[in-house]
Picture 1: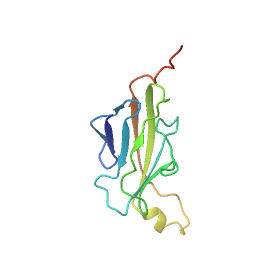
Picture 2: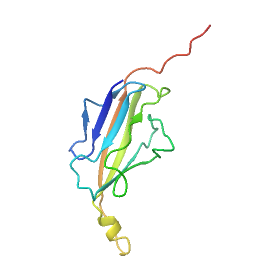
Picture 3: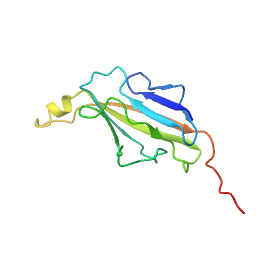
Picture 4: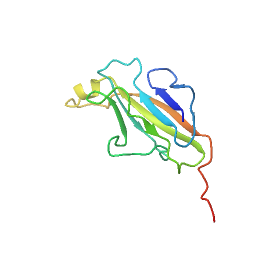
Length: 127
């Protein structure tokens, strides 16, 4: 099984070795070169291909009081073959500093990416 690292600090988001994943592969989201004070929230608006567990709750949070990388996440064995788009909202800490101020919302850094589940889920064996 392969490990795909998603670096949120690059423009555009970078994948190592690439965005293609197979069932059972591991995905790790990383803050990359962002300062430790930055935070990121990652959501999948049209369905999540990753297995969610009690130890890694969803949405995925990085930085701040959380680690700068997620725990290894597994591509679900039941994920359909398609691209699973995700959104990452990066905060440099200014939204927490201005939470008490009245005014328009801050323009947070928003990035989009996707994980391409490239093989079909296993078929049930019929006997």
